[in-house]
Length: 131
Image (cartoon, rainbow, N blue to C red; front, side, top):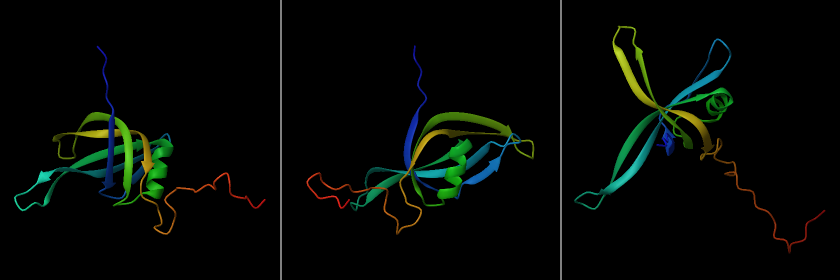
């Protein structure tokens, strides 16, 4: 039987990415996102939203790019796999959590609000090109 572990989400960063490096020099960025899902309306007709908070970890060049260009509130599309991680805290208590290990992402918010959102208009073939 086949297995599949793939997650695709769009959400806003809940905190600035935290970038650190392994002893071998590999970048590791940790951040969280909030994903809002409409779940209907209340008695007064106001939209109800369920918010899911998800921890994400990125490695290598992806980690460095995310730490450089994204900040709290930035909108991101991401793909990755779900991982269950366990560890022991400084008090000796066992801790665990699910997190997403990033495999692919796309910025959905520009770094500077004055920048164009990445869409480049090309002239129609009928227009004269001035060169």
